[in-house]
Length: 333
Image (cartoon, rainbow, N blue to C red):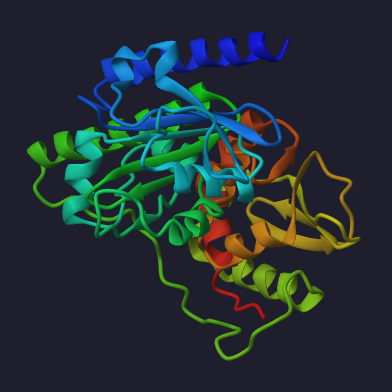
């Protein structure tokens, strides 16, 4: 039974390796992938192998605690990074690619210019980690970055994506490559791509005050900012932003319901009885309030849970994007 599972996973890895190679996200002998076999072991591509031409013998079993392969074939030189991912996350797969457009773009910049709604929705703020060696010798910063986004760029090196399925990890990698391609095409038509309009908040109500996260004072300060924001007021009326949206801190009884009427929060309740409820553990909310994690991206990547139809909520994507941006304007302790 165990042998059958292992062989099935190797077959899956061979298939995804071919897709990575065929889409140009890795060439020659670059890139590596792995999958969790069980609680103690993973399967990872061997060193010096081509993802586009993998054989069963090119995929080795590695014990996470021992940190080395169970046979004579040596695992990928990026084993330490894969190992640390599985020890810190419940992810089932790790995909490390060397996409040419992504590498070229982030060699000269550290910020992703999101030109499409898909880029904002599925990728958000992609972390970029500096690299000084051909192999990731300091995986710690990469692990911290993966806490805010399931996709991380390794500057001058490639990308690392984690997910429950190979298809999901590859999808966000391909989405980033396409986003960079879109930027390149846009620059052909217009040399200077202007930043999306983001009006400055005229009055920061809490500039010198740090409030306990998810306290009544913290959430009320956010409500005050929202109700003073001209952009949300304008879009709220235009899109008839009238809905009840609740946020909840997992593992506690702390929950708040925003009652929107045409973009204005007319009432703040301590309740989760709403058609849309966003819940997450404290570490995820902290990243959101610090502005390091996009709420929409967090939901699509499974870092936060949404009770309700995301498609229905997305019709108010523009004002809600602004709402979540305002979250970081209130300092937290």
